[in-house]
Image (tube, rainbow, N blue to C red; front, side, top):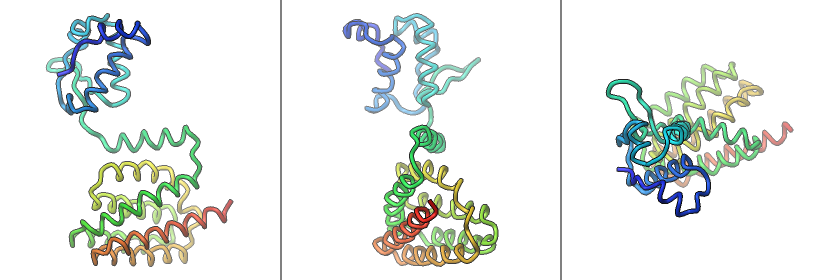
Amino acid sequence: MVDLTVRGQWRAAGGSGTLSAAIVAQISEQLFVGQLKPGDFLGSEASLAHAFDVSRMAMRDAVRALSATGIIAVRRGSGGGIRIAAADPDRFADALAIQLTLLGVSRSDLIEAQIATEAMITRLAAERAAAADVERLRALLAAAVDAVGDGGAFARLLGEFHTELARIAGNIALAVMLGGILQLLETGYGTDTTPSRARGVLAKYRIVVDAIAAGDGECAASRMREHLESVRAHEKSRR
């Protein structure tokens, strides 16, 4: 349960910041160190205000901030209350994409981040893929063959291919980072993809999948990196 000592801590710190910020910091810290877990019940807004010895307004501000960052889930009505939220990888990927956009990260930087992230993802996928996983990857590439004349559809199918690779790799941290990066990159893919270039991309991905099927993580990662480096070079040539 959350350690409800915020007013005393706030006063000891000389009253710096606000009470609501102190509540947010305390609950966040206890989540990070494992004292709070997803689904843990914290109470109602009124009960928490009483327990923290703060005004309802300060508690309401803290609840808004905690909810906005996805730390808590608030349920109204009978049986409701405030709980530590369940994990939502899609929300993290969305937030990452938004922050990268606000930071003004360039497309070149995004591709470089994709190269670093996806090389490891591909290596892990080769180490962990089951036969059914390999078949799923091959099926996605087969479906993409029929979409080589439609840049948008082709890009979406390749996005599914990259997402599936991340799922097979089994590393959630890498998967959500790649998800946020791909959200931004996919908006520009497909606009200049000719059928010939699309077939060339598929040929490279088949080699990657073959390496994954063979369990050769070094080869799979190397081939993926080579392909993405060629994408990086192509993007540079367009500028």
